[in-house]
Length: 195
Image (cartoon, rainbow, N blue to C red):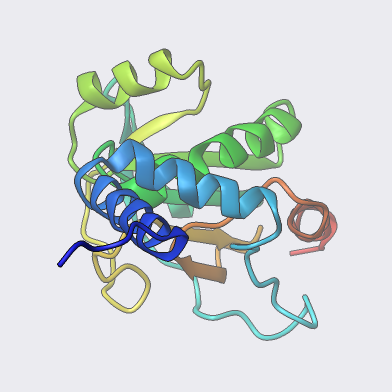
């Protein structure tokens, strides 16, 4: 008995091939996530109202920059801190990196905002190679202390924002498009907020 090749069979086979490629190839998966971001998916939820009670009081978390300089969140009081935990092998992390780079470009000259892109693998050479390959100009850090499990449980990407009083006011796990007008307005509101 001969089987007919139908449009449904071709479509099913094509979908299975795409799914297999996405499972095997992180770059393909990150490209799909990025494409979904471009059509409006993966928008980070902004706390409404934006002046609601902080998620948590000030934390004392230490990071190390690419030059070995230690930076502590308590030392940055008075500044809004954007922290993104990521890894080079993580497709959702790779997918959101262009939007974080664009957001950073908007705020990099603002002395009241600090961006910390934290490589969870603590591998500067690999992370810097990734950044250079993609022409990202993000400030790289590694962790130099423990992070409380209630704000970072090990899932990446995880993004945190601390207000200028050092309180955690934003926490999001998963890929998101941070280069959108709502998130930019949220950061601007935090910058202007008296502490």
